[in-house]
Image 1 (cartoon, rainbow, N blue to C red):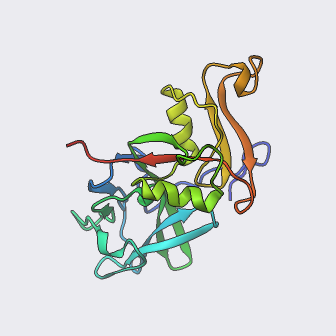
Image 2: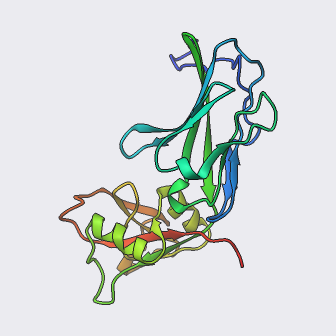
Length: 228
């Protein structure tokens, strides 16, 4: 591994894979999305493995493995994924009928004997974040109840990135709510007394990670759908 001044690791030059021109692919629920992965060379015996990175449990879930001639699908995404394979150097992954849970980071890894290299891409769903609380008042959900409540609203708990984007677009909400990673936040644009006081700066304020069983808050849900 090449080290930069200060000890940081420098990215190694890709020998077999092309660096993606756009590492983030934007889509909506119900659409078809393609994550690009194109080889610049075809090693004699190689495999390409696609996986989805799950930050909540530090795991990578395998989606598909190919050797250029044959492929095998794995996991819950299996019925909705295929290799685009528009030419013999193309190992791009196509996902049909994109679902809310498909959003996140994906890895295309080429394995050539003892060598391997990979690229990372992000699938980003366009949509809206909305705060949600039950009709009997605020701060009634533990984490698992908040997760179910969003699903019952045809949505899912928002990620921090989705909540932050909603704040930049004008979401101003005084009640704290769970998000997908088990942390609790609330977005404030206009600082005011009931919401932490006038002296605190605007922003996505955080309570950090909370007890998923015992602590109770509202929920920030995210939904995405094709127009029309």
